[in-house]
Length: 127
Image 1 (tube, rainbow, N blue to C red):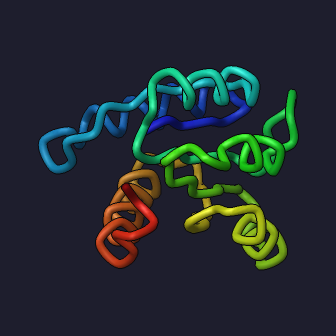
Image 2 (tube, one colour):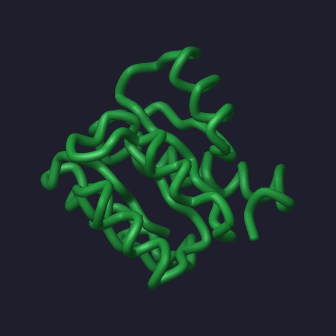
């Protein structure tokens, strides 16, 4: 799992929660705050799933989605703004799903469950 978010503190919190829940989900999690770095990591590391913040600073998140075309990776767009417009745009650019981000540990744990459920519901999207 590659988590892409422009706030380093949130990346660290997210990774900490993934690590704390590693007994439930066998997830290897890497984080980055850069869209450019995310594209490099996707090409080199080949994560199965990418959680991509809709509002990363250095590159438009839809440019990252477009850069993933032709690579077997499932991208789920995230945002702290619950927006159908973002969700529709993300799907138009090839995202497999959308998750609303909240910044407390319980919400992150809930989001991990959502991701697992997305993978189970759409196995064709998640290689």
